[in-house]
Length: 178
Image (tube, rainbow, N blue to C red; front, top):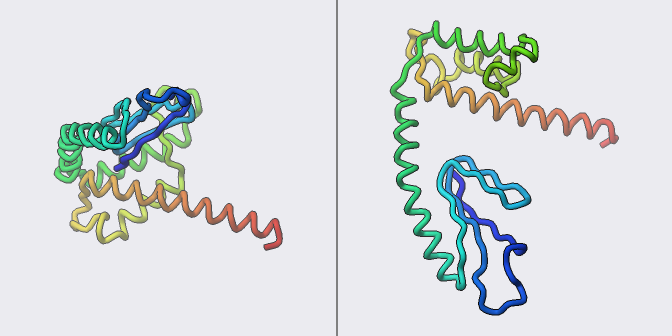
């Protein structure tokens, strides 16, 4: 979850004495802010006009209280993931289709939802499904909850990204003689 705020001096009249200042405050699980102050958020966000620091605090807390509605639905969806189970056969179909996606021509990939997982991440999910005691097939029958699948996918992406940067850093150090 991300909580934060931005301020754009371009929106403020800096030479005027008693004009409200512009702030954007947000709270959500996925937040994107670009350099021209465009803000997208899956939670709640608001454009605040404030005269004092107390105004900022008061309006920010009002905004954060609105997040409870979004939080409740998000927590309900996450809880539903833990109560939804996949058989080993269904898990294998998902992995197979992820692998198949990588082999499809670009024209066919464009007609499908974009999948940002590479081969190494998919292989990592499969390895962890077999070996991970916390999120793998610990039930003995091979079934796995969608929550466990989500954690396997997160772990695979996290590891593949860090491995990529570590390998890149090592290669650049060798090239530079470090």
